Length: 114
Length: 111
Image (tube, rainbow over all chains, first blue to last red):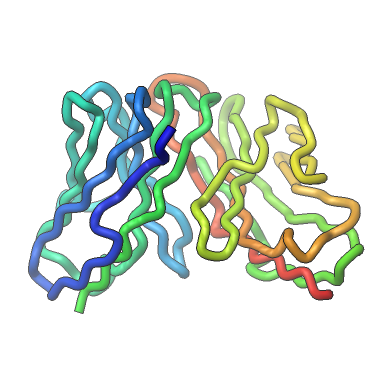
């Protein structure tokens, strides 16, 4: 099976702009989670989607939003970018939205905000 | 509050030495604990989880509920073990399925 794919792999944006990141889960996986990875904070949970519904949300401002499509692909959007949004954004998919199922991570999208 | 603490940012050992990566957690309930590893230029991947109680690549981790710890151990470190290790916690069921990660420990195995 193909692994989790994320596009684009690298992005450079200017403060105030918005950005959309895409994640395609492993075929058959219906749960997609998003994480922000930074050197100082490590990995922080953004949100999780299962069958097009947001099931869980982390402590991020409303500028961070996401959605999931009927084919389980997911997008996350960050509006009004700030310098502090520079990070590696990871998505992970799993078969079911239950903790005991292994999450498979994508390679990440490296976002740089200037 | 749900929290995972990895007190060491960097752990440097020599090849053949024992390794112990510390992880403590805070969670009111019965959590599920995981160790994830990220090798250089590779994706984050699951190393092991407490419910499986298995040894992966020579690593083991025992959940100690009394001490709220889930330390990762290996008796003899290998150079290929050098990587970033993350301890993670998840609740059981419902709205607590998210993974909460520690800040990670970089393991450097010297030859």
